[in-house]
Amino acid sequence: GVDSNQNYLHPGTMLPSMLKRVDVAAYNVFKSAQNGTFKPGINVLGLDIDPAKPKRLLAGESYLTTAPATAVQAANASGCFDASTDMARANEADAVLIAVPTPLAAGRQPDMCFVERTVESLARHLAPGALLSLESTVYPGATRECVLPILEAAGLIPGQDILVAYAPEREDPGNANFGISDIPKVLAGLDDASLKAAEAVYGLVSPKLTPVSSLEAAEATKITENVFRAVNIALVNELKGVYAAMGVDVFEVVDAAATKPFGYMPFYPGPGLGGHCIPIDPFYLAWRAEALGLPTRFVELAGEINAAQPAGVITALAEALSQKSRLALNGARVLVLGVAYKKNVNDIRESPGLEILDLLQARGAEAAYHDPFVPEIGKTRRHPNLAGMRSTSLDDLSQFDAALVIADHTDVDYRRIAETIPVVVDSRGIYRQWPDLLPKITRA
Image (cartoon, rainbow, N blue to C red; front, top):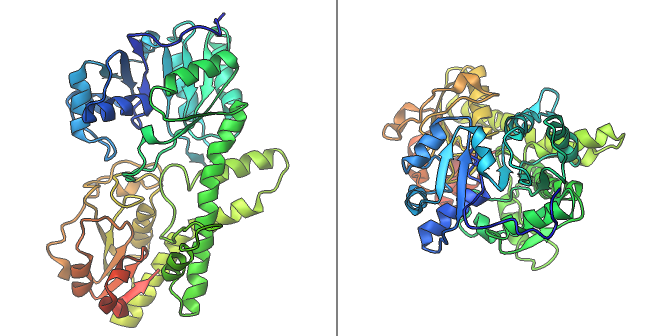
C-alpha cells in the first residue's frame, strides 16, 4: 500500500519524461539551467524509443525550437539530466510522466496505441509506489479504460502498488510569453494519494496547480480547451468566405472586434488546422459522445470546416493562375511558403502545408517548399510521399509561377516574393502590412 502522508519527492528523485516532446520536468531543467535558477536535487531522465533523440540531447543538441541548445547544454552540465532508450531505467523513478502522440485512426477514431504501448513497456519496470502520470490528450475516460487495465495485467494494483494521475500538457509552441513554467497545471489523481503525489511533482515547475475531482474531469478540461479553439477557428474560416463575397476583409473585422474589452477574443482564419491537438481533439470528443449515443453536431461541423480549408487554398490558387497568368494548375511551378503548422516552429504534425503539397502534386503542379525551420520533411503517417523533400532556396524566385503563404514565419522576405512571383496566394493575411501590394495578392 501507499501512505497518503508520504513525502513523494526527495533529493535524487528521478522524473522521466517521454522525449517525443520534452516534457514538463525535462523542460524545467532546460529552462532553469539556462536562466541560472536551477536547483540541484531533482534528477530528470528522458526516455524515447527513437535513439536519435537521447543521443542528440546528450551531445548538447536540441531538435525542438522550444528548447534551445544552450538550455540543453546547461542541463547536461548540471549533472541532473540524462536520456536513454532503456525503458528498464523507469525503475529508478519516483514519478514517470508520459507525453506521447494520440492520433486519429481510420474513420476518425482515437488511436491510443502509443499510450498503450508505452504503458506496457514501462509497467513491468515501475518501482513500487511510483507515480505514473499521463499527459497526452485523450477522451474522457481513457486513462481509466486504457491505462489501468494494462497496469493490472502487469500484476499492479492502481492506487496501491502504483499511483496514477492525469495532468494534460498545456503549451503554445513559439509563444515567448507563456512557457511551460508559466502556465497553471490542471491535474487529477486516481485517489487522494495519487493526487498528492502529482501535486508534489508538478508543484516543482508550475506556478499554480488546479486539481479537479476526477481523471475524467481533467481529461475533459484539455478536450474543452482545444475544442473551444477549433470551433472558433472554424467560425472565422467560414466568415472568411462570406465576408470576401461582400468585399470585406475578415482580418480587419477581427482586429476591430478585438478592441471590445469584454465578451470577445480574436481568432484568425488560415489554411487549415495543424499541430497535434487542435485538428484531432474534436473528433476524440465526438467519438466518445457517439459511443454514449449523444450527438455533437456543432463540434463535428467545426472539424469538417477546418479540414476543408487546404482544398479551398488550392481552389483559390487555380483560379488566380487562370485569371492572372492564363495558366492551368497542372504543370504550374508553385512555391509553398511554410510547411510547419504555425509560424516560427519546426513542428509539422497535422500541418496543412503537407496536405497542400499533396494536393498540388495530385493536381499535376510542380511543387516546392521553403521553410527555414523545416530543412527536410521527415516520415509522416499521412504523407509518406513527401518524406525526404527538402526546403528550397529563395535565391531564384523567377522560376516559380505562383507562391502560397501557409506558415507566416518571421524571417522571410515576403515583399520580394510578391514583387517577383506573378501569383501570390496569402492564407495568413501577411500582406496587409503592404497596402501597395494588395491589388496583386489573392486571399485564401
